[in-house]
Image (cartoon, rainbow, N blue to C red):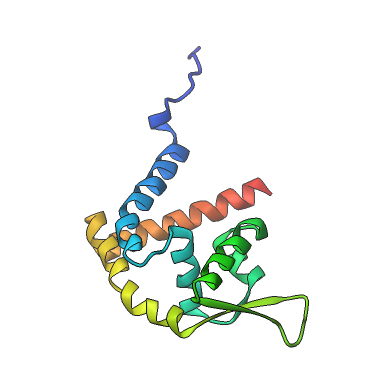
Length: 147
């Protein structure tokens, strides 16, 4: 009968994903420092550049962040004049986020970042895209398994 062994940390998929996430953060840091953005703030901008004037709830859901995390992030961006918050005209309970002119202008400064990632990964766009699809599928399977 074979003895069951605990896999080492380096054999764990979760650690490979976790440590890759940290490597991404280190890779992004100097590029985002030039824009005076944190990684979560950059992700929020990616969503807002794609679709402006969305609810705080929608932004949090898109980024997998709860309201306790997303609200301070938005407040910091608002204090810098990059976004504005306003009540939804149809549902006063909902707060919407809208880019300011300064927030929209930041997009031009950030355009080189996705290309730098492709270069940094050192693989073709097609290979990188296939990896991204696999990670999305993994996340979806884990979400389903978690209930």
